[in-house]
Image (cartoon, rainbow, N blue to C red; front, side, top):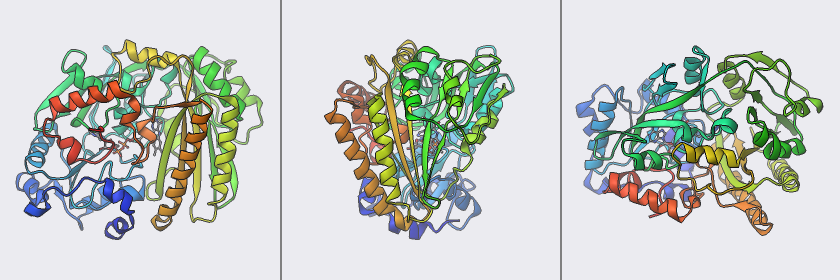
Length: 490
Ligand SMILES: Cc1cc2nc3c(=O)[nH]c(=O)nc-3n(C[C@H](O)[C@H](O)[C@H](O)COP(=O)(O)OP(=O)(O)OC[C@H]3O[C@@H](n4cnc5c(N)ncnc54)[C@H](O)[C@@H]3O)c2cc1C
């Protein structure tokens, strides 16, 4: 178990001020005890093995924090009772699924209750109606394994251990080019509302809530089940190899647009210990074909050092392959901005990030990661066809690029200075993109830092819609005031 009490002492004052205020402290309400009265076996205190297990389930050490207890429900009715009790007693609480968001305070807290959805392992495949019903405690390799058995796949994240919280933000996936974002392929949410009632939100039932949850994060309730569309999996080829920026640009404006069966994830890393730049570009072709299609051929025509291209009809191994090297316990910060794809700026961004990364190579365990990921007009069109979301991307006429920047330090003590410099780097880049007319206002929830104004970036109409939905379903503002994370700017 990590030493959470000393860890949270190191979380910066800026971060602590972003956490929900301790509403009930003056009234000396013991929120864990209130839950333990009803669920004696499901409230886990420091010192118990379950508390340690749940503490260690966070990807970034900066996110572990120190709740007074973890509540570990098994079924929706237990979440409903607990949320009702926490709301009526004004208890601070958090909701955690896979623990992979790097935003401090998004899924844990100091001195409150963290609801860990670990036990929600439902993954029921309906191959006739092409739906998989997924409990929020699953990691993506578990969902891939369930659908692999039917030669089907949902529009999921690409890494094995990442959790279903991804489905509340946007969701970049192998299937984005043909099917759109993950959120746009959710047909129903089962949600526990602030007052402890349970609703199904879908196109036919509470459609406003259903839409609000497509990008609205944890602002409306606790999702206890997602019903996701699934698609047939043909044979396909995939690989991992170095990339050039020109190929990345080509992917954004050509392959992702014109050959929708391609998925490419160009990543560039810098390892502080070795001083080496590393490139790895997992790719996937979602159509059965014996040889590489023209859209992918250029990626193998450049020199590569490692290559795992093969034909397969299951995706679980790929999810594990991608996740290799990503483990829990280091201090992590992710930040993102969105630009219009631009060949020259792509080069410049990579060079600038390399320079930035080199200046932090001395930090123990330092790693820097940068990716460029497309959002195409077709993906936005798919969203509209599927009922729409709240991201505010409608109307784009050319591909956008989600620019991702991540930094890692082994020791939390090194993180404050590193994270501040990382923020300065990304904000500076945003300024340059803006000056050149390349900036798009969207900030992707999934890769955002705690102090990036994600919901504001959706635009005023969507912000107003989210406010209206929050007021309708959570009139007392429980999920605004007692639960941390990206909040609606009221
Ligand atoms: C190694 C790695 C790989 C990644 N790969 C991808 C990728 O391929 N595509 C992509 O789009 N993103 C990716 N991400 C980003 C990912 O989408 C986010 O980290 C996402 O938050 C992960 O969900 P989680 O359940 O693990 O997170 P958590 O930290 O548990 O939750 C994130 C947020 O969602 C809220 N939340 C979670 N579940 C619920 C629920 N059931 N009800 C209400 N609120 C809830 C939490 O309160 C928290 O605020 C990756 C991240 C990492 C670290």
